[in-house]
Length: 330
Image (cartoon, rainbow, N blue to C red; front, side):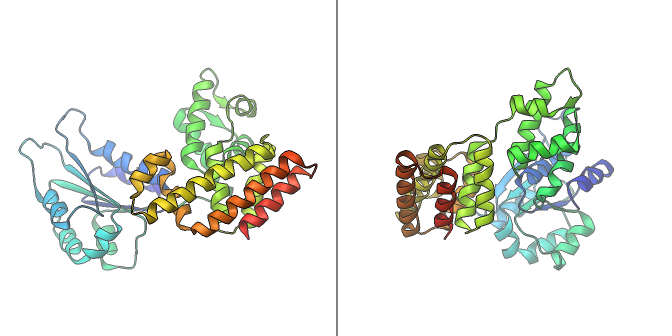
């Protein structure tokens, strides 16, 4: 089922022995977990227990013991959430199958995974007594329709043309799109409809997102996507010096992170030192792994060369940037 089908399922039956939430769209994953939490937690019971554990760090025995255990003061079902559950599932398939054949009447289990094989016996057991929620990323062309539907959550309307404009300005990041929708709803407190003029007044393309997407495209050697993002930045008024500065800043951080990983430092310590925003942490380290130190050194040299040219030559600035992106992707 998808996120919409989950809402229908919860409306019919709040308690569920097991829910598997998987996919790459973190916004949908967080929304699914929140929906299940909201349905299960008794607001009148301050002892409504929610236990969250990491599948990477918590022994399987601890998780199963927590599921079977019932606290003395517990009135409603306990909610046990296992995040990063892929390795836990892979290593404990037999134990999970046994558990699902006789699940605890006192606990509901949520497994949050990146991937989920629907062909397995475990998956079939899960679907028989619980829920499997597929949280895949939506395509660019689906964004306007998603925005139209999501605006209703804020008791607003937005037409497809305006939604397309918002999607083009902000990009395919549902969390950031939702943040802008919320701001627009507050800004439009006395109006029912969100209009293009409101976007002009309030929404500024998010530089942090854009620079992450640009370095993502460079890391994947995706010329067309990199050029698309570059053009988006130019349309929004970014000048060549600023774009090169932003790229150089990100490349330096990736280079430093690569060095710190080689020294044995963990991701949390590196994030703290480099002030990586928690929301972008996962994507940041995915980028780090896509480059070698030698790659980053060469790219930084290309950026310095382009920076000097952008400030001292009469060379066409857009062509200069396109040549730079071509060189970075090569």
